[in-house]
Image 1 (cartoon, rainbow, N blue to C red):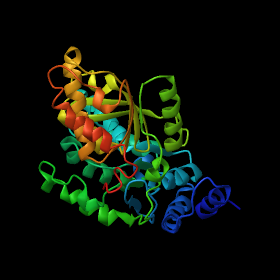
Image 2 (image 1 turned 180 degrees about the vertical axis):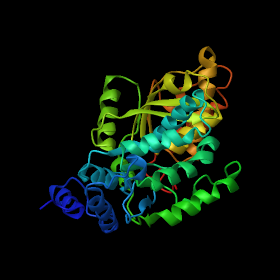
Image 3 (image 1 turned 45 degrees about the vertical axis):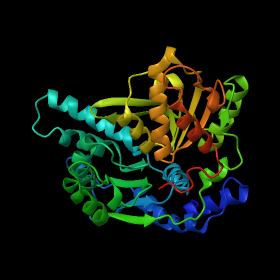
Length: 361
């Protein structure tokens, strides 16, 4: 007999891989119901993908809750256990980038509705679409995601997604948000919304008492950060994450389940601005930033970007792990901007506290 998700969860607890959590365990029956449905052979119609939807099928699932409560772990457990080839686990931002690229190609062919062939292709490829970290920060995403989800649901695709926010808080205070509200209604009508009410922030717990700022940025720092990356990602190597910001791409070299890793020059050596750094802060909950150099008039532009990045991370309550040439107060000791850097140094110190980000959304 195939073990249920609850069986698999309990086995991991028994092995010491995860801590027992009643709130996490309570979500498993809802995921198991969708797994059981998806493991049945699909009923296909004359047009294959778009008409394969059985008469009765479960709603999608929208799982939300605070940072570090185990949503991604439950998603991984569900996705790995679901025994069907037509499934995909993807970060929401990366998926939307693919949708935009597909629409761009469709427009080149002169189609009237560029979204329709892209949605149809996705529906032919998957029966299960598992999103992690769903959030809407870009106006172009906000304008198409409602129709996209509606098309996929009509085609019988089961969508399971995690988010740090309830549906009502998606795209909060965004441009033309009134046009986005029908999508919230769609989520509420077509997806089961479950809040993961665990009181424990496991991601925060993993970093409690851990050193998160290393200087100098030498081989020892690299080894220590490699260990933290492994701890936070479960050993996953990570994949690039591409964010769409005001019509351009901002990329993070490595990303997995809300944890990102980049070098100083990746984020501060390019002409990025406040909107880019705010998008990064919205997309990740932990940022590992490596090899921060000494700052001075010789790299003034990069230093200004670094200050802007730290401000965005600070306001977004993003957990920062960093390696640097010096301790915060000695990173920028001379040249224009050194006085203003005192606030950044203070924030870098504050962000090293063991409970930093614990009150984040």
